[in-house]
Every structure is written in C-alpha cells, then in structure tokens.
Length: 312
Image (cartoon, rainbow, N blue to C red):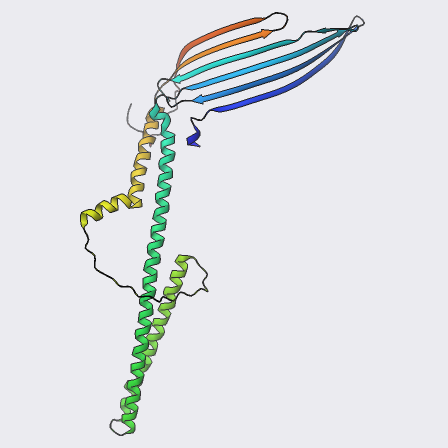
C-alpha cells in the first residue's frame, strides 16, 4: 500500500548447513565434517527525501573437523559482517514532494471514492423520497376517484328514480351510465398507477416484492425563505460531484509532478560503511568507507506525451 512506503522492512534469516566428505590419498583416509550456522538480518528504511538507509548484519560460525588416521583436528572459524549504506537521489526521485506524491494520490483517491459513495447515497435517498411522494399522490388520486365514482353512482340512482316517476325521459339514463363506466375505468387506472408507484419504491429500496407499502401520513409543505448566497456556500461545501472534481484536479497535479520528475536524469549520492570481523586461527578486523556519485540516463525511454507534453 502507498501508506507503507516509509515503513521499515526488517528481514531476519537463519540457516544451518552440514557438509561431510572423505578422501583417500596414498592409502591414508581423511574425512572432513563441516557444520555451518549462518544468522543474518537486513533493515531497509526509506525517508521522505527519497533516500534509502540499508543496514545488514551477517554472522557465520563454521565448525570444521578433520580426521586423519584417528587424529581429529578442529579448525573452527567465526566471522561477522556489518554494513550500513545510504543512497540519496539528487535529481530524479529526489525531494519530499515527489516521494510523498504516491501517498497523497492514494489519500485523494480514497477521498474521491468516499464522495462517490456519498453521491450514490444522496441519489438513492432522493429517489426514495420522490418515489414515496409519488406513492402518496397516487393514493390520494385513488381516494378522489373512488369518491367520484360514488357520486356518479348516486347521480345514476337519482336519475333512475326520476325516470320511474316519469319526470325524465328513459334515454337520459344512458349518459349517467356512461359517466359511471368512465369513472370505473379512471379508478382502475388510478389503482394501477398506485401499484406501479409502490413497485417502483420497493425496487429503489431493494426489498421483497411481496412486501406492500401503504402510506398513512400526509405531507404538509410549508414555504421557506431561501437565501441564495447561503445556498451557494452550502452547495460548494457539500455537493459530492463538485468536491470529487476538486480532488481529481489535485490528483492530476500530483501526477503531473511525477511526470516532470521522470524526465530528469538519475544523479545519486551513494555512501557505504562496512566492518568485517573474523576470528579463528587468527583474528582480523577490516573497516571500509565508500562515498561516490553516479549520473545516468536511459535513452529512448520517452515519457508518455499524454501526461506531459511540454518541451523541457
């Protein structure tokens, strides 16, 4: 992960090896038995400037047993090696801004992902609210159409009684029956619209389709005094797509910084200190210091022009 780029890497190693062989020269048998125990560890630490500290320690114990004509000779030997090195890029890969860019990009991308999640949640909640209000509206329309159908039936019944009393012509009943039939069709359409609105809300909420949602409350809409300046500030501070666009712009700036850095030459400062200790038949100690610099450039490896196309 990008956050682990400056975390030290520690690698311990332990190995054991046994070697045995026998030779015969001039009728004399000679056997050699060697047991080697090796313990080593390495530690690597990268710092924000791009430099790398490397520490290694290696210890080796060799137990040698030589047997010739029943005579045993032990030639044990112990050695250890300690090395500390530091490598610092001076051009390409040097500087805190370039080396912290991957960490910044990872954090910015994580923030952009959070804004994308917020946008998804906002859209889902908004769709749920609108679908629920459509369901409430469909329910009220069903109630209104039921009342209209009841009134049409009452009017039809009144006309039938007037016709029976001889106060109206029988042909006038046709218009009342037509109104009742039309109201029944409109009511059926309203009920279908209610079912469709309920299924739409169930689909948005992602619940079982056999579940029925019957709204019971009513919505009271009250006018609010809106301040344009306050709303603009609130939108810029909380709108996910606007915040995500700002994060993408910062990611592009960090990517451009990396692209510019990749166009530079490799100039590295290298330092190393090594100490070697050896004990056995004779003790020996050796110290070594090294300081140097190297400059290199890979020819033919041009950076993508889509990332950085300005002439350098």
